[in-house]
Image (cartoon, rainbow, N blue to C red):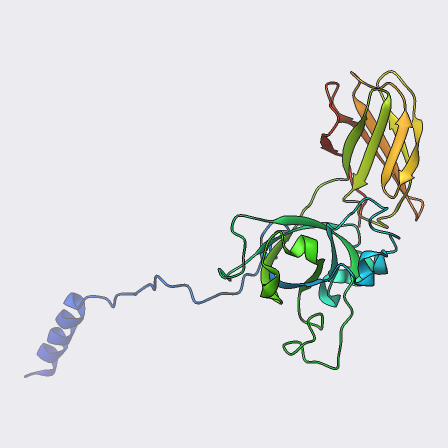
Length: 263
């Protein structure tokens, strides 16, 4: 075969040979997201409980809220491990927790909302997986047994949970009767501990509320059929004003959300 003919054959073969096919996998092996998770997304952690006789249910712990019962938090509280506690900046924040994975001990369809009031200190005498529940890098919640048993059977012990931050503003739960108005202040960011509250109706000026106990504040005033505004001051001297938080037709027993302190 002459060189010219051989070259012609090679060119014809290249012309009619199909191009290689690129195969795209339907499986994604990249499990690391480059974007930070939203605060509203469920995240994994673990939770344990302490008994009612434990002194932590009588004092406010690292967040300095005093007697938690008198402060109005009751048993809906949590101590956080070091990696979650953020050196106290998280105090006063609210989290929703639910039991996860363990069908033996989880109570299906339940979740709880707790306020951060304490710090669970690391115990470096144990490994993070061997008793040092609150050691880095563990994300851990310590709950009163009364709160724990709302989502899981107490025998669960160190229970896998999922959590998410309850974002939003300061919450005002209004109670009372007639001209007696009580407001429970919760989900307070920043310093977290409220030292002064004022309330305002559409037909009044700003009226100072008295501390009934803890974060329950009260006033004797007829504010029915008026939208309500609140002014909240924390121990660091900062004030947040939330106008027209409650509409004109508010009722006792309702909870309303206002603005929030910047963390």
